[in-house]
Image (cartoon, rainbow, N blue to C red; front, side, top):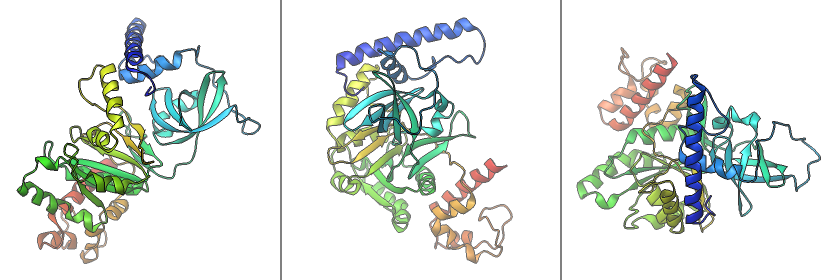
Length: 382
């Protein structure tokens, strides 16, 4: 949709809104709980309906599910690309320099949140002269994932094949959440991805706050986690950040209000107009990220912008994997009296980890961060 001019985008938005209203009427007419219609659902975001409207242009009815032959397909019948964004039943895929809107094969729809993510390398197959269908996903080199909010027993892959997870926090307004950094460090290491911390809005922090931030972030430096203090508003620190990202594929993650989209627009000014057009088309008065989207940068890098998160669940992480993300905490485990010590407060005497926290050898925020995540993991396990 990025190729559409503002007028075409507004027209598409109106069509999508009409389709959404018709779907609501259709569902009400069924008068039975749990009815699911084809394509987007009435309560889905308008962006998904815009993709669906584009998909219907000249496409006719959705094709029947059919298996693509493994061999014998010509180059004209298959293409390979990278997923830029995805909605229910459809995806935008970059093939060379062309952005294509494609349907997702029916056999993949039930597990779409797990099987198809932004950054995935996919194979497309021709289904009609101007209609292509996403048929296969290549094995992933890395991933960032979490439990699906609608079904915690399923994995929701946020981004695939990324080189770096960039967690964006604010120096102030909203306050920095160390717990989110800790959880993303665990998730990144589990998915085989490096982590970078970016502290935005440092122009709003006074000297006392900056000193406090330095103390909070010092443990991450020791873990070889790159930390950058920047201001999207003034440009401070952005040159070093841009250089560090290089030609990598990065995913931006952070709470709402920390300035992820503003940071992205500052790193790549040509994206600002595109973001503004999208916001205007869907009736938003500000830059609001509603879905994960991959953007290409002029220097060859690529960044996936994601919606703001309030919390970040961990997908199938055990205490052993937690210890790998907290090596500074695990380093004191040999001092525990009991080999199965979990370093919590429930009747665990002679805990070397807790003692290290008491005498200052282990920073208190690191110990508390470990304990918060450990308790949540144990609670999930029952």
